[in-house]
Each structure stands twice: as C-alpha cells, then as structure tokens.
Image (cartoon, rainbow, N blue to C red; front, side, top):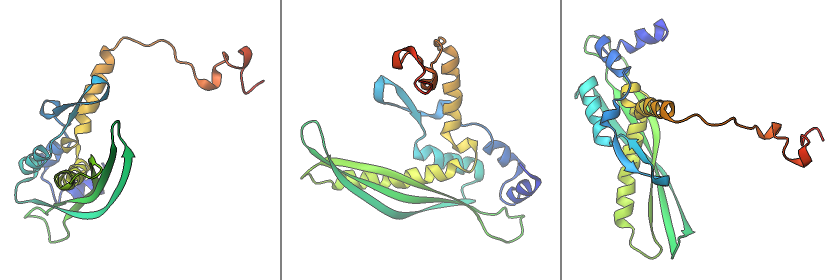
Length: 194
C-alpha cells in the first residue's frame, strides 16, 4: 500500500480496524450448501457480513443502500415443462463515514452490482420467487461491495486457503498434454507442422 493510500484510509479507519480488515475471512464462519457433482460449497450469508461490518467498523460508522438497475426475463424448456426466469440486477453501496477526529470531507464509497434469479413454471404465479430474488440481488450487491473493503469481508480469501489445502492433499496428476503439442492427431504428425 502506498503512503498516500495509507494516509487516505487513516481518515476512515483506525490502525486496529485496518489490521482487522486485512485478516483473511474466517473459514469456520462459512455456511455450506450442496452443489453440482455432489460437492459442498462454502458461502457467506448476508447477515454475517452485516454483523462483521458492525463489529469491525462500528455500528454507527457505516451505512448501505441499494438501487435497482434492471431485470432480464426469458424462458427455457425444463425437463417436463416450460420454465420462466427473471434476473434482477441491483447496485449495492457501502458508505464508510469519516472518523470523528478526521477533518470534514466526503465519505468512502464502495459499490458493486449484485444479481439474483427467480425461476418458475410457465403460467405459475411467481410473486414469492420474485420477492425472494429481489431481496437476494440486494444482499448480493451489499456482499460484493463489502468484499472490496478488505479481506475480512471477502469469503473468497477463506475459500482460496481452503482450496489450497485441498489441492495439497490431492494425489498428483499425470503429465498434461497441451493441445498444440499433441502429436497423436493427424497421423502422428504435429497438426500445425503438417
């Protein structure tokens, strides 16, 4: 971090807060969900991110807002019937207020776009799914914005460490062939060299 950046951040964060923000996300705090290939994925729930912001920055020193941007609708053929989807896009903004000891000036703004999709059967009433997707897009925007503040709010820092340890425990793979160097095609000749 440059000296100018450190000076700028010192208007908004105490040294203790900057140290806490730079710590990786605690993998023990990740929620788990099942995904494709019978794998388990870790993710951070929205309530946890808000609680972390309160704990590290202070309940009265930050605020958030969301702004609807657009939605995209479409249809696709499901296994048994036509399905509809509606994806909401929402801008999430986290605003960090200046420290009481800092001179007057603008607040620090972090903004990202979040999204969430509602899926429902063609002809069904999608009110509940759409309400859930709208809230999900707002939560996603706030989570993405907070992740740009520092590692403590970014679950990917925990996932990266978890993935690295999984890769260390995995047995080594055999050598990989590059498609450009694969001479098994074209009758044993390199395809580009004829």
